[in-house]
Length: 138
Image (cartoon, rainbow, N blue to C red):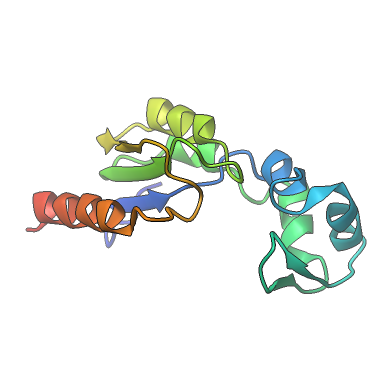
């Protein structure tokens, strides 16, 4: 349910299918996924210095403790979703479904040819966020 202290939400390249997304080759891949699910600490995945300790995050996903689409159907505060159309790590189709299922007012500027980290498009992301915040400034 909505929290009265929250006036709006911003989701940047959101993961809406957590198990499928993190298990995919785009982020963890099957080998790291299985190791993390077994409680091992994994590091340096996604070609970055990221690490996950003790499998807690992956097991939260496996146990269904993160259900963004179900939650979206309960929320009504304004939502801005920013996603690049060339995101190979987190498929933009999930953002489209989030947009469709969200109960409150939502906007989804699609950043053409932008990847997951918005390479060369940070000014576009910033502009989208600033314009959204200005719209809802009370």
